[in-house]
Length: 417
Image 1 (cartoon, rainbow, N blue to C red):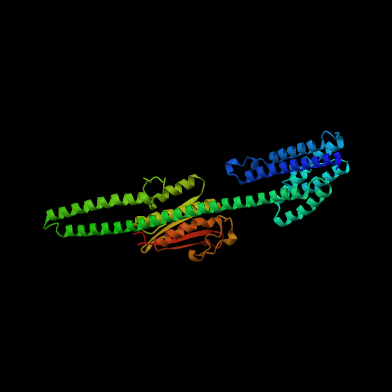
Image 2 (image 1 turned 135 degrees about the vertical axis):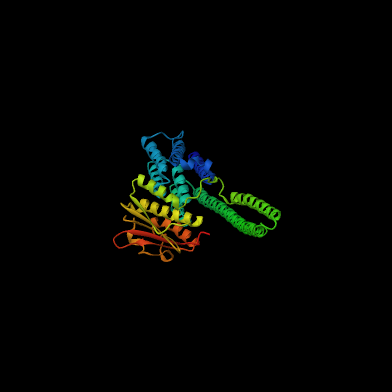
């Protein structure tokens, strides 16, 4: 073996070692970045900067192999080497084109009489193996390995090793991603189970609250009746009985407050304001008038005392109907009618606005058959329906002929007790 042949073999071995070292460094960095937690993924957030560093490192390595002691620097050599390394800045956006470009430039260097190390081509092959599926990556390996070996740039084992690093990086990324998704699913599942447990516990507390209220009211009612029976014949006994009723009421009130504090959502302060009633509708109408909505309130029939729960539901139904009218219809006129009847209270709210999706609005019908979630303007109707059904009433809504939209509710007189 001549001295020149031995030098070429040493140079080739040196080139393969440098090229493999650069590819391994890129593989290790990319794998660590993609497998790290959110706080450590600085390179993933700065991919262009990272690719620029890879391009610079590959260019320097390629030039150091080309411009050795026995090789004079030529402009064509430097231009081809820099172009080959610079192509790596686009390796994420177009990995296949970058691979083809680096192979073509490596062939051009060989054609001009240079001995390239193939560093940019190996980095490009690693990127293809990392980002493409296994079958397509294998399709890239075979011609690349054959071409680099035929041009006496890099041996087949080195090329296959770099490709294997890219394939491993892809597998590692998919494994880490699957672990992260599984961890996120487990966290969501745990949160959901915790919410279910809280709801179940609150339901249990609500049942206990019902039992406490029923028992306490029953005891107080029996005591009051007993005191009334002996009020004239045995005043002392009646006074003692009423004292027990008072203590029972106080204890029940304390227990109720404790239970309600548990049922209240965390961080929700207690509302000290009294619940609104029909007497507050005038103030509500005045507020909407002041805001520029022409609202008219009409009351028919003889007003009479109604249960607090019924008056609260009636107020909320009117309030929600006005809110929906302002948000979704933009009417020029709204008429509220309260009709006091012997069997209960009838509520009617009509407006002349045009709904956001009039074609999807049902023609005046019972809410059980109405698609209340079909359009955005229907969301408030769900609450109206629930309030009405709790009281044993009926709710209707829909467009009337003439373009008016009508919400009508019937609340039976005994529904709020």
